[in-house]
Image (cartoon, rainbow, N blue to C red; front, side):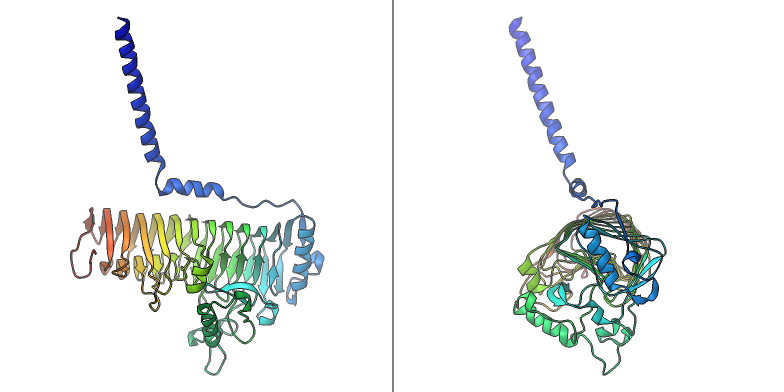
Length: 480
């Protein structure tokens, strides 16, 4: 009898161990996956906190009449705030004209409701030059309008307006394009850009790449370089020279509740470049270029620096005009990985693409682990999902694009393509998975050349159902 009891207990113990092992295995499976990893990224991102001290810029000589230059007043208020251990530098109601504003540790530049910071149209007001990036290349150039380098705990917040004061007579004509206000015989950035690209190819040390006056390379609006704990919240941005919000090699960045309306040339909305742990939330975009463009350096500079853009969350935002809603590229030589975008709305005949990945064999780099879900689209112009490895002239650095998942993308009135993939035969796009998606009223459902392991599940394009791994079906779709 005793031996029978022992055997039964033994069987129960074995069964229990097997059950626990099964539960453990099941738990591991449930806890895996991209959106479980997204929660880990989110848990690392925290807004900086500031002491309850206020430094009103009018106490340091600022005048909000839209005419008085207030660059010195901003500088004094920020220095005083930093010296006291931090707090809010308050911009009250009024229009405050200024040149470059440089943030310091523990400073929150806070714009009250009715406050406007109007930036000077005189390039001299953005000197001396600072260490910055221009289209993915490091150099010494005009200061961005709001700038910080090697700083911690910094913010730009409030309900006020940042007006870059750029137009077809100031900043934009530097592109050399007639549609931007340039006229024949006027200077432009052609020679400066050619010189900078040559220095990049020859790997001239960045601090010896001296530009500024005479080279016509436009400054960005807000740029943080090598910063930690950054918050940009609530503000409205208009009329930028080019890129609006540009975190470079920065970590723990939150951009939320920002309203961007700036339709000038190269007017990207937000460009996280070689940055890590970035949260973009509750923002509105009406831009002259990409709404959100994730980058990591151009060509030699991107490879030399070797810092990918990684662990980036985008959610609860609306995209109107722009070249693309969620974009990676084209300056991605350092790579992009772990991008999570969800709960977005997009709608404009002047929005070219929903998801846009652009690179080339001149750029190289690896773009991987890109996850989108719950995207509602009214209309767009070119493609809902676009991967293009021929964005620029070819080179000797083959790009890699892999692990792209799109779930619950719903388009009412599509543009030319549903899905468009242009890749190298030597480097096909790998592991593109589309699920629970409906795209209506597109001219060409899909055109894909070189790709491997493309999977559709519960997908409808123009009423046709796709629910399997895609195979070669016609001349417009080659599964290599």
